[in-house]
Amino acid sequence: MITSQITKAVIPAAGLGTRFLPASKVVAKELMPIVDRPSIQYIVEEALEAGLTEIIFVLSRDKSKILEYFEDNPTLNHFLSDRGKLHLLDDLKKFQKHCRFQVVYQDKPLGLGHAVSCAKEAIGNEWFFVFLPDDLIDNSPSCAQQMLEAWKTYQGAMVAVMEVPWEEVKHYGVVKAQPISSFVGKVETVVEKPKREEAPSNLAIIGRYLLPPEILPLLAQVGIGALGEIQLTDGLLKLAKNKGMYALQFEGERYDVGNKLGFVEANLAYALKREEMKKEVLDIISLLATSR
Ligand code: UTP
Image (tube, rainbow, N blue to C red):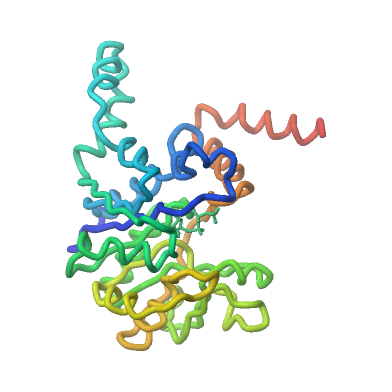
């Protein structure tokens, strides 16, 4: 485990999740399972593995089940220990042992930049990570660990980026970066959801950000941006201009579990990673492929 003085992870999960309606009407999309655990658990695990122990959820009032999921449940603990299911118990308890959870509320989904601002007091005057729960990144070392490693060298704000097909740049924050090593570039500009012909590159920001507290006053100056929301990207542009910012092309497989296809793909990919399921899952896939 890489250790650093950065301990805080902000996880914004106050969005409406409209792409998962009708299911998201009653179950937060972040609690929908990838195989057998909520997608947000993979994110908290990535944070924990990177040595981040203070987890700050930004939630809407009707998504408090997310915090409940990570809290201790004595009735379930007793049940599992009576039945000797100690591996399940350990799995559930590791969060209380190693993390401290906090919730801040965003009463209206005014945008990702606004969601991060809502965590201002919890962040204080420290460097922090932002993890978007829609982006699962499968790799060892994790994307957050790769960013921390690069941060030791560059000591500057950093976003995780990957190349996406040009026709998809309109869905992302897109950076133009001057390469300074094989994986790292110095960000020159960043644009939220550009049209293909206006995009400065096809390097898209994927949901991992390592930020200094100076981003917070900059976000307070940001007005309404793309989609009528207060965009984190607009704060990042100010940060890149004022203090500099780096973009890291991470290694790893990324799944966008905020959309249906990515969610199905992630379920298959993570099931295939489980030795005990692999063969059956492959059989199911080939059976489905031949029977359609
Ligand atoms: P998205 O806009 O991609 O997700 O926000 P959404 O709003 O939850 O889902 P759709 O588009 O309606 O299906 C990216 C991340 O930022 C959080 C979301 O919860 C998601 O994790 N977010 C977004 C907030 O916390 N607050 C906001 O105001 C907007």
